[in-house]
Length: 121
Image 1 (tube, rainbow, N blue to C red):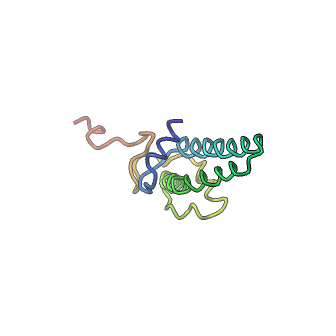
Image 2: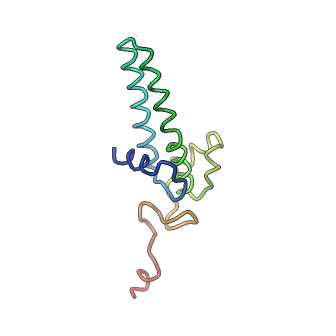
Image 3: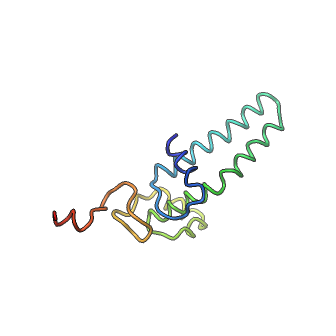
């Protein structure tokens, strides 16, 4: 749940990097919430409540795009790669580029050693 909240706190932040766990946990929890609302609406036979699922989906549209762009940055690609079908899925499951890249430090902390840490000064 913390990964989901982290994405919502970075509502429209398209800068930086997002690790796989952050991206996929947000997608999973969003899907569970959306389908949960539809399931409850179906069980209660309340079609008006099903509209809440659409409102929720529109509400998390920008954070979904933002975390997707940050995920593309994590593998060293531009956020525009999110628009390429199937290749974006491949990139979303690919491991992070070790160390910092042009979009920031590795969110896992792997390979982020600075010059001072390497030389021991």
